[in-house]
Length: 225
Image (cartoon, one colour):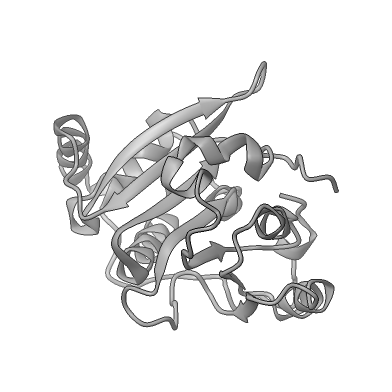
């Protein structure tokens, strides 16, 4: 794998979130969700971002990556599921997920309809991320998903964040969504939330169904994201 992985390099997207991309000398606590075996965290570290916490539910992945990057002090590796984070409230300035939610949704039959189980899992994940973000903290989501399919999952007033989006790439386009905690949804996103709430299809069930205990399959550690 090269620094230019399937969703682009960290250098090619860092300018999309200026508070992160232009000030590596400023200490910011960052969490990488669903780190897998990607080189993104190492690329960020080498670019000057030294306080990085990586999580993945696969113990095999965490053990392998921890050993591989043992020479990078300040970078930690934790096994946990992203829908049940064990961090205290307001732990991070930035949370980065790069194609992690894409992997969660890979078995959906169609992008037009998200299953109740997957919608519930994503809702619980985003709720946990919001809890762990500091005031004015950022969730940066790098994905293949076009705004029509992804923005509706982020547009919920209970997350207490605003949404901006960017795109990059030639031929095959990628998207960067930046959620800023403590800012209100735009009128457009508020209307989108209302539209989703009017459809029971997008209301998450009360019982969360998760597949994060399938550690023995260890499939995410084999996906080069």
